[in-house]
Image 1: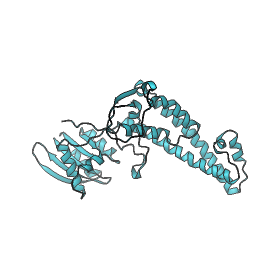
Image 2: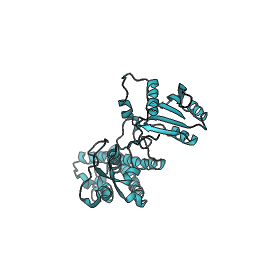
Image 3: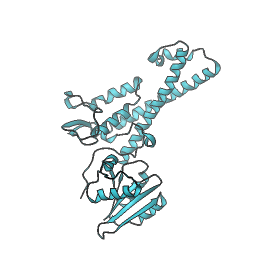
Image 4: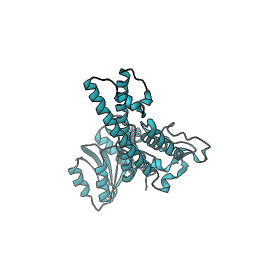
Amino acid sequence: MLIIGCDFHPSFQQVAIFDNQTGEYQERRLGHRAEAEQFYRSLAGQQVRVGMEACGHYPWFERLLAELGFELWLGDAAAIRATVVRKQKTDRRDAEHLLTLLRENRFPRIWVPSWEERDVRQLLVHRHKQVQARTRVKNQLQAMALSQGVQKKRKLWTQAGRPELEKLELLPYAAERRKQLLRSLDGLEAEIEQLNRRVEQELFRTDSERALQRRPAEVGTHQQTRQFVSALFAGGSGTDGGALRRRVGPLLSPVGGAQTSRIGQSGGGAQAGSEVVPDVARRLDVRASVQGGRAGEPESSCGGTTEPSA
């Protein structure tokens, strides 16, 4: 078997390769994506295991390895870094360190969602972004109303408040801006309503997705469920967000209602006892907390650790 430690970057990857049959060791720097594809296709027919840190921008690489029948292990980046003794960090050392963890069966492998699950994440991320856009539009319209002495807060979005907003005496450019904002608001409301229906269809698509599962808490359990809930309800102010929360609320409660689940109050560490984890949370997990260039990346993997196979 060829064991490859891969320090993956958007434009290249540094690899450390070990053949456990011959003992041969080599290092290479592969450009993306032509050179990398050529290298891995040259290994076709062999048994290959590739280990890399969990990151974004790698779906094409994952598809390539799956096509060739190679194993791809994704590891917890923080756990991998914590096992490094030397502080100095280079691409070559990172690739060599990943290879060492793989060879010594110390690689902190994490759960990776399926392609279908990651596609559903995109639905939730899109809804989250559209709700944020609607909030920005409403804030601008509220500011216009306040500038004219109209303070209705949430009542501004009722059937009685909308005509009052449209009748505000504004100068020509401000009136044109109000018209455009109202048009944008109507479009966003219709789109969000459609997205809500599609989210509900995903939630109740199968019996297994409606079931609650009680199982021992694992590393990442709280993180996965918390991210799902925050993404599903992010920015869900107003009637549609509240209605969706009420519909899904029973799915996030403990069996029998005897205890309240503490989802979101603890980190992704190992926990004692058991927690109520909805099966749908594992299926529709999404990163709602956008960070830098990985904002809303469906490819970013997170979740519980799994024991590496021999």
